[in-house]
Each structure stands twice: as C-alpha cells, then as structure tokens.
Image 1: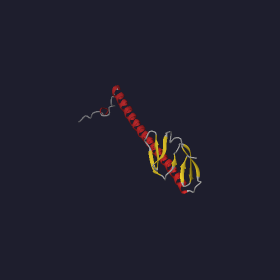
Image 2 (image 1 turned 90 degrees about the vertical axis):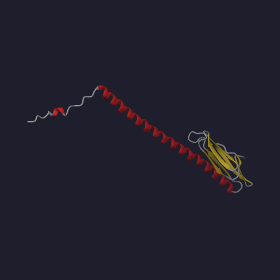
Image 3 (image 1 turned 90 degrees about the horizontal axis):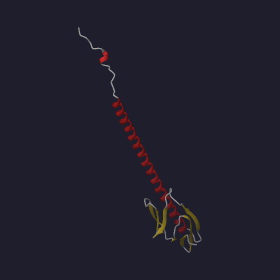
Image 4 (image 1 turned 45 degrees about the vertical axis):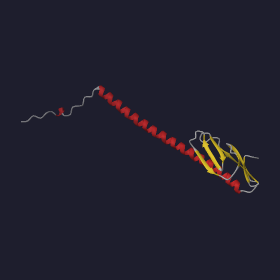
Length: 145
C-alpha cells in the first residue's frame, strides 16, 4: 500500500525574513510616491494651462473693448465724449496698451501674451486706468482735452 505524504507538507506557511519584508515595504512606498508626484505634476500643468488661457482671453477682451470704443466714437457725430477704464493688471500681470499705425497693441510685461487689432485713426494715447475718448471736427481724440 502506498503511503501518502501528510497534507501539512503542501500547505506550509511561507517564511518571510525581516529583510525581505522591509525591501517590499520600501518598493511599495516608492511606487506610491512616484504615482502621487506624477499626479501632482499633471494637475499643476493643467492649472498653469488654464491660467494662461484665462490671461489670453482677458487680454483679447480688453483689446476688443478698446477697438469697440474707438469704432463707436468714429461712427458717432461730433461732440461725442465717453470715459472707459482699462484694468490696472490682468490676473496680477502688468501690461502695456498702445495705439500705433492704426493698430491697438496690448502686450504683457513678460511678453508671453499679446494682441494687435486694427482701428481707425486716433489722435492720442491709451493709459492704464481712466481714458476719455472724444470726437471733434470729425477726428477721434483719446485722452486729449
């Protein structure tokens, strides 16, 4: 008759050494840290892209508002006068606004965002803050009284 080996032989508990357990722990912690840092990096990049898009939209909006103010003044009759304001900063970023050679030109100080739009001839310069636009004798004046 054949003797069968005791079942205990086949179901022995694995013997882990302390060194192996600590290496596995370090590897596991390293993997979790890697994925956590990768996740944070992706989120940071998304936030920066959203902020850049928002700045770009705001600078375009300001330029289109200026273009509309000048267009409205040029189409109005003599004696037209209106005040409009340009914000001091665009999301904590300084910018310059000017009108040269029939173009409105806005650019941020870091030179990352800019826009140029065509406008009718205007006499005067834009200022950050309060601007007064008038029309006298068929000529549009900006900040000249």
